Image (cartoon, rainbow, N blue to C red; front, top):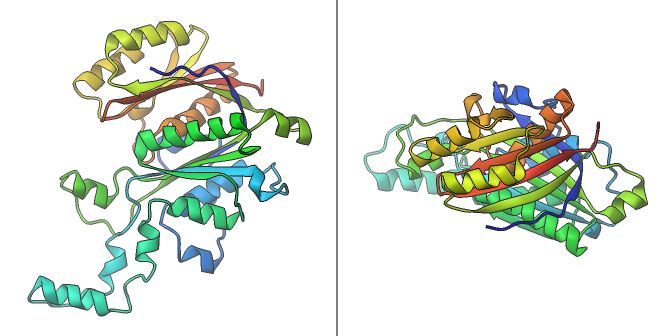
Length: 328
């Protein structure tokens, strides 16, 4: 179990999700931004959600500083690409064998020529860096819950180590995209399109706050992370970090068996809470970064001062993050 009780300033946050019960938990849902055509052709489908969320999170922040002062840390949920629609236009109307189909696809000019670029696990990092002309510290994580936590943790470490003054933490994708379901042996219909979600947090150093005069809207602290949490350990963490005055948000992936016991233990806490799994659309882009955005949105709406987020995935990875609301 790791414990990191230092805090880092949060100066921007935004999300971009398809309309659902879950999307209503956020402060706002911005319209997708316009992206130059030259850049758009390199983008995985979820990148537009991420660029939109990042633009919104940066709305009151200038990136006029040297590009090396801005770090970017990303994580992609699901596989992102390819999709059926990227092949369908090139599929032959009739083919007697897999070899004929393969030959038709290989020689067709109607297959997306940027298919490989779109499928790269650092696509989101590259697209974001190009869009904002960044060349500072950067790291791309895959995938899902651990990836989202890794991006957040790496950004905090970079801020504390002086590697950057501002850190963009961007997560995007869909945990239920067709390729993910196929690799999990989950029966599903072939989908030409999937809905994506994205959340971006902007972290800042104390030096940057002093230099620019900006105020933190919240402060984040990583409380704990690790693998294979049992109910006894969970109760110990809750007793240490979750107080009656706090607001608790938790996302327990695949709440069956042991995970169900953990979800029940969190639900029984004597604090105001959100069981994020109970909202339709919450499984699009789950992760600690998205949970932080949800929690902070509620803290602002209900004038709570402190929130705690808990995430737990199917592989047994857990993370606890505390949010101190500075905008009261």
